[in-house]
Amino acid sequence: MKGLVANNLYSMHDNIKLSLSVALPMAIVPLLAKDASIMAMIVAIQVFIFTSSMGASFQMDETSRWNKWEITMPVTRKTIISAKYISFILLILMGLAISLVTVLLLGLRGEFNFDMLLFGYSYGLQLSISTVAIVYPLILKLGAEKSETLLITAAGLSLGLRLLAWYLLSMSDSTITFRSPVVGQASLAFALVMFVWSYLLSARIHLNKEF
Image (cartoon, rainbow, N blue to C red; front, side):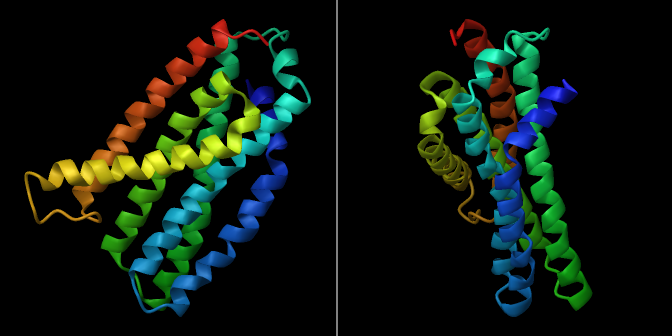
């Protein structure tokens, strides 16, 4: 398992470095802007940006034919899928770690806005988790060569998920906005359910897939 996870991260090495080079400098942007909502957007982007490294890993695996070789190893296909999802979780954790730099800098400046921070984290986490949940089964089914297009599509659908949660909740309470904590909680909870469903679906697709 550790070897599979390490291989997944190694195949994304260049993209992870690129994501880091983009996400880390973004930490100073909220210090230059007066609008507190900028902080929320920066945190959300920092949490999500590492997830975009997924596409490179899939394409590299297909180009090198690693997908065919790994199933000959003394591991089950379920273990292979588990390693993929652990790798996805580690990418999200990388984004969370980088976002803490933004929070620390704002805290030192005394410009901490808890409501905006909560919105940024709930939005970034929901976007990351639901994007992974949607895109990976599709890539297994349709092929890694379409990974970039599928990733963009999945991100769009993830945004749609939050908009849908906002719409449904606002039907019972018109004071609820897109940034309301209850919208973040509902969409994040559904994203976590989707992640578990995605894992089970991906394991089934992989088991029946001919490489």
